[in-house]
Every structure is written in C-alpha cells, then in structure tokens.
View 1 (cartoon, rainbow, N blue to C red):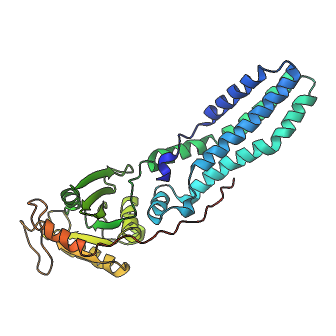
View 2: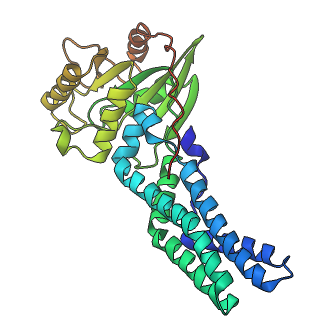
View 3: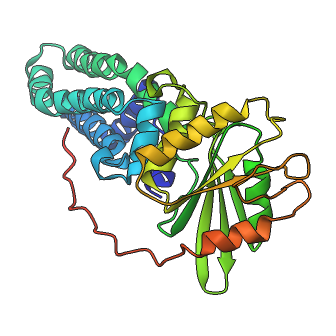
Length: 322
C-alpha cells in the first residue's frame, strides 16, 4: 500500500539542519572564502528545494487512490486540507528555487560577504519556518494513514449492523483459516480486516464500526467510515440483527438501518439474526456467534456469491506538481 512507504516528514528545523550541514561540508572544500559564501547559499537553496519536493513526492496523488482509501482519508483529514498543506510545501520549494539566484548574487555583490551570506540564509530559513505547521500536519497524517488496514482487491464481505450485535465475533469465527486481523488506528472502534482461504477461494471480511440509524449528515466520522466501506468495497453485505436487543438498540431501529442500506446500494445484502440462543426472529436465518451455531450455514450462503475479482484498470500516471 502506498501509505506504508511515506517516510517521516521533517519539521522546518530538521529540514534546515540537514541543508546547513550539507552546505557546510561543501564549503570546507573551498579555498576562496568569498566564493565559498556564495556556494554555501547556493547549496542551501538547492537542498531546501530538493528536500521539500521529496516531501511532496512521497505522498500519493489522492485522485488515483482506490475509493475506500480516498474516502477514508477525506473523512479523517479532508483532501482539500491535505492539498493545501502540500501546496504550501510546494510554494516554499518554488520560492527557494526562484529566489536562490538573487540571494547568491546579493552575497557575491555585498561589501561583507559573510554578513550577506547570513542575510540570505536567514531569508531562506524564514520561508521554511513559515510552513513548519504544515510539515507537522503532514507528519501527523503520515503516522495515521500508513497504518490503515490493507484491503485487497479480492472478494469482499462487509459486515454491517448496529454496535454490539456480534459483528466482531462473527469475523473472528470465520477468518481462522487465514487469521490476519488488523485494527484501524483512527479509533479502537475502527475497521477490522480478516482474511479467509477456503480451498482456492480467497476472501476478506471487513468488520465495520456500528453505524447508527440516523441521517447521513448527522453521522460521526466513525459511522461515515463504515458507510465508505459499505459503498466502495463490498461484493456482499452481511447485515447482522440482534432480536434480543441485548445490543442496547431496539430491533425496529436495526431493521430501519437494514432497509436504508438495501435501498441505497446495488449489491446483495444477506440479513441474519444473531443471538438465537436468546431469541429468534421469524423470516431470517438464525445464528449464535456466542454458541457458534448457524455460523457455517451463514458462511455457506455467503460463498454462493463468491466470484473471482475482475481486472483492475490501472490509472494513468499523474504528474506531481508543486
């Protein structure tokens, strides 16, 4: 996944420290000290530009991300906000490149080359410090998105329903053949991904956080994250009901959410009633994840929809600009 390759984003002081040390090392090799001052400014200017461009290039082009990742990043931070931060980094890189020659010229023409060098470097440092908050913001983003769960392009079952209806219990029961489980770092109630191999058939289960039955604009980021999973990556949705209402939510509200999902998406939805050892529900397949009964039958129903994933059209390379 592209996010895993994003390195730590340096602060403004870290950018400058590395640039100054590199320039100072080059300066020691110069016998002509006046020329060395000019070369110091040139080296700092070029190094700042290159370091900041590298920061930009380590982030993926958001428009080319798979829908699940793109929408999740937008939920967490807002893609316009991320573009603003990257644009600020690009501005500083461009400023260093465009104004570097002027600063070098002023250093060469100044009556006191050392003083002129200090003024030039101070201007470059001032520009970099102006984007320090954006660098720190991007590093915060990096620390979260690089831990996003790995969602493969294989047959995917999204498990949906109210909180505490047995979604996590189900995914742990059925993903034992290949028990890769990764918790999403945004919240302890985030997405969990579990994989299963059944013969030559590979599939993944996405355990979504509980989505409450309310208007989309009233849902919090966790709930919106779940809806992103439901609408973007599911081949089949397993909707789990709790007729016993031990989950803390009325059955009527659970059914309303089920009806909302079935009316807004165009993929199969399998509804089952969990906790059948406590209370059943006419008209729905029954299972009990607590007693591990009926789970195999539900899994068999899901496997009837299994199919090989179709070919993925790779996006055209998108040039990174700054």
